[in-house]
Image (spheres, rainbow, N blue to C red):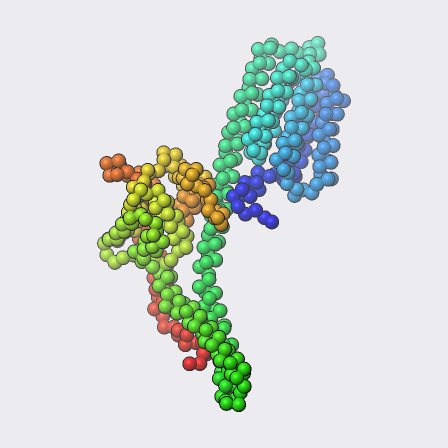
Length: 463
């Protein structure tokens, strides 16, 4: 089973392909081989050539074994990836031991495995690899073969310089590890939150398509139901009084069931014929009422006002906007002490909606990082996941999803807190340019005003 929840996104984002590690190691092997050959034959430095290539060959053998044993698309677990990176650190340490320890300028390559771990593995494994790298660097500062040089075959640098290199490796490992992990984690969170948003949009689109499916089903079922009713009436007329009581009961039951199906189809067709156009193009006040209606039984006073200049704006019904605004209203009702105010305003240029509550307001972190994923407005005791809720429960995705959906419609969303003198509380303002808010509504209205044959008249159901 594929895990489509947020935890599944986290695991999939972290797991890297084995092919990535193999390719990076081949690159490292090529660089190490070139450095050893260049120093030995190009510069004439007396290196322990055989031992150096034996260490490099160990990495090559591991690469060949992994390539033969696993397919290129194989994804490593966190433990397997950490072990491979630990091997790379040990292999580099062995090569540095043979070529001068920390006196070798390539000792800074200790940072590379830690950097890879920071971008792909959990923090605890990155910390373990960083400690391994620092530990081996400390050992190499004290124990190593002398660095080959032209004069007398060796070069000994001052211990103060070695200490400086060790400090650079220590600080570099810590800084690059933390920085790379932070950047990679923010990227993963954004990708995961966008994936969760796409799931919400897919669900809303599926629900929006149900009306069309219901109308199509009503149209297709009309003909066979009409035929069944005609045949039933014909059998009743032909048999008349000669029919046995059991046959009459069966015919009456069949007619009753057809009537029942006709009633169901009538509801579907009346919804499609009478309400589809109404739901397709909605006014701003209708949007507000649809948002408020489910909250009236929550025990919170809801004050709704609508006013503006000129005719009230209308728009095509957008499930994304309804979901986003509904999420904001839900939060306002959840955190309000006793009252939520929703004000709809419009001018000839702009349409705006303001939602205020008398709760504690937004925290400074939420205001600073408004709309970023995984920034929750709920305290731990209020973020318990409800049964069946798999998207965004307690993960700080609600506001991110709402902001993303609303801003996709061309709106601007702003968060603030009301002044303490005015009672405090959270304030959410959503505004559109009027021409953006009303785009698509004119075409929808023209479609609704065009003459159409009601679906009930198209169904061949006898009366």
